[in-house]
Length: 325
Ligand code: ACO
Image 1: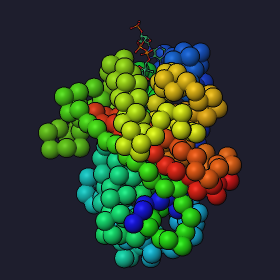
Image 2 (image 1 turned 90 degrees about the vertical axis):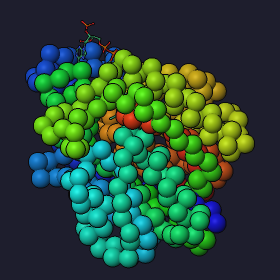
Image 3 (image 1 turned 135 degrees about the vertical axis):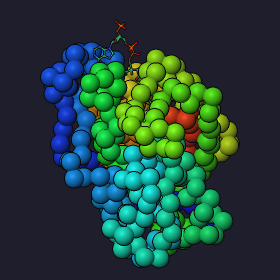
C-alpha cells in the first residue's frame, strides 16, 4: 500500500502586518528586515480567530481538493506549537468543526518541522493499513506567543494554516510520498523556547530564540535531511525538480539553494516575503501554492524540508502525479 497526497489546502488570515507597521512598534526598519530576512509582510489572525479555526479552513480546502467528505476521514493529525488549549487537542476541535465523526484525532509538536513529522505519521498509518484517509493539518497562531516589544523575534513570525489528505485510495491520483527522514537534537532545546504552558512554568508566554545559533543549525540540518531523504529513495540531487525549504529567512533559503546549485532559483519555492515564518504551517502553505500555481509534470520530485525548535528537522520527498494547476 502506497501513501500519496491526494489534495492540499491552506488558509491565511486577512490582516496584513507590513514592515512599515512594525517600524511603528519597535526600533527597526524595512531595509533591515528585507535584507536580513527577505520578509515584507506577514498575516495576523483576528482576536477571535484561533489555531483550530484556521486549521479547519485549510482542512476544508484540502478535502475539497481531494474530492472526499469529512466523514471519509479516519484520522486527523494537527501539527502546532500554538494549540487553542493544552487540552483538548486542536485536532479534536477541528474534528467537531468539520463533522468528521469517524475520525480519531491527535496533535503533534515538532515546532517548524511539524508538517514533515505529521507527514511521516500519516504515511505510516496509511501504509500499514491502519487508516485509508488521514487529514494532516498544520496551523499556527504565532502572533499569540510573539512579544511585539522584542524586535529580534516579532519581525519574523506570521499566522496561517496548511493541510493535506494522505490516502491509499487506488481510485485517486496523488503525489506519492517517496521517502521521509526525521531528526531531533534535545541538547539544543534551549535555542528556541516558549517557556509557559507546561508544568514547569506558568507566566512566561513569549517565544525566545537565539537567532544566530539557530541560523547555522537550520542550514546544516536541512541540507543533511535532504541528502538523507534522497539516499533513502535511491535518488541523486539532480533528480529533484522543486525544493521547498522551511520559510524561516530568505538567507537560509538562499544558502540551501546554493547547496543544491543545479536547481534554477525559480525552482526553490518561496513564500517568506509575503507570509513570514508560519512555523509548522510553512512548508504546507508553500506546497499548496506550488501545486496550485505551477504545471507540475508527472514523475517530478518535490523535496520538502523543515527545521525548528527541539531542535527538530526532517525532509520528505514527493513524486508528483502531474495533475497540478
Ligand atoms: N531591526 C533592526 N535591528 C535589529 C533587529 C530588527 N528587527 N533585530 C535585531 N537587530 C540588531 C541586533 O540587535 C544586532 O545589533 P548589535 O550588533 O548592535 O547587537 C544586529 O541587528 C544583528 O543582529 P543578529 O541577531 O546578528 O542578526 P542576524 O543577521 O542573525 O538576523 C535573524 C537575525 C533574522 C533572527 C536570523 O538570525 C535568523 O533568521 N535566524 C534563524 C531563524 C530560524 O531559522 N527559525 C526557524 C525555527 S523557528 C521555530 O521553530 C518556531
